[in-house]
Image 1 (tube, rainbow, N blue to C red):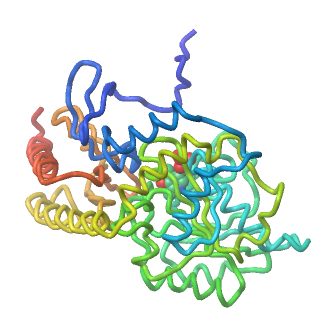
Image 2 (image 1 turned 90 degrees about the vertical axis):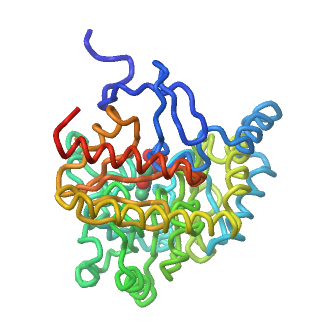
Length: 395
Ligand SMILES: *Cc1c(COP(=O)(O)O)cnc(C)c1O
């Protein structure tokens, strides 16, 4: 037998973290890594946040799980906080981002179909989008590498170029139910949706009675410097999927919707065994305690501006390696002139700095939102050393 006990779908690297300390990871062999990957935009409070740990410990000892058949004081609290802090009137909790997007897709379809008309089911989605790995969410993505081996895909998705409003207009037809879009494409390479594009989608949705669905699984929960990215982009969606950072490391996601958009989501139409159980709600409430206030958000924006300014300055020293800095808040990307994976591996293995490669030749810089000046300085020491000996071919 040659297959590994862990199904070999990930090319796992040699770093084997066993402990987290604030913004660092410690591996099995004792090596310390500066974590500017954050479990891919998940560990927004770092790895040893006392408030989050305490809330999970306390809830675990009190009540971990009950069925959604029962009333949920913890879930009502978190849902109310999300409703108060966003455009939404109602929330469905899930265990992951893909499930949150699935719930969003179902909500958008049900909006049109609840009265029996089944002709409107198609969501227009965008090239290089990433929405998850379930069958519906890979079907919603144009990326062929995610489709191979899993045919047939789910019907009901049409792909258009990101930021191409004319393409969207041309793609709207009698079956169109809405648009599903990441306001900033994450896996696709930290590509920010233009104001013209996102406002155009809102206008098209209003004119044609379509659902505007934002996938904020990566951009959400203070990552971009506002609780959700839509707030600073001047466009309010009808439905929004959130996950990653919302549990601070505990598996949690949610589908947020307006009352109008959720008109089809009535008793018995959707469900989840674990979704929103008391343990998950304790984690989500602890994350909201930490991030959903103007002081924290203002700090994220300030740190984002500082990190970005220093990155801009830094890439000027290596014009043959880097093309530009892009992103919002602490969701930043370095667009490279070479394939970023080798550089990511070099930073990881030779300088103990963790980042994430993404599409469009982009290296993602996703620090915990709680970084301080010391971590930022350490990041630039490692990045500069890494660029210097990567360029010269040393190490
Ligand atoms: C990560 C991600 C998902 C999928 O989340 P999972 O928790 O892995 O299912 C969906 N959409 C976006 C934008 C993501 O970044």
